[in-house]
Length: 128
Image (spheres, one colour):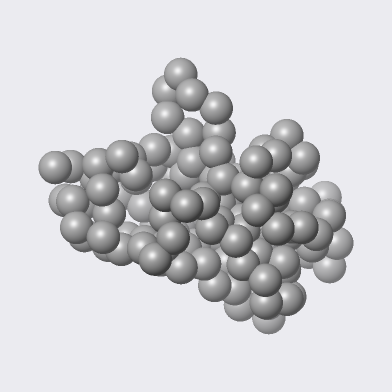
């Protein structure tokens, strides 16, 4: 079992920046892919960015490329999402996710159901 605890988030004006962090605990050696998804009411959870845990391959949704950066600290079992140039449409509940399967490219952003481990979610609100 893996537990994920998120921190960060909050409210910011358009054009601002926020940082989200996710710390994993438990059987972390089993993790192959970690990342962030987001969800707004009435819509499906969508992938934002994922990374092959302990590797270098990182994947981003087109809507956040060039604005968001996902990094990892393998020794601290932490992934960090740095968000800049935020837009009102980035407003959502952001979830950290992990799975025991490699990210395998941008498909990792399209398959929330294949992630068995989730954090509790942290709200990001961007005002215009």
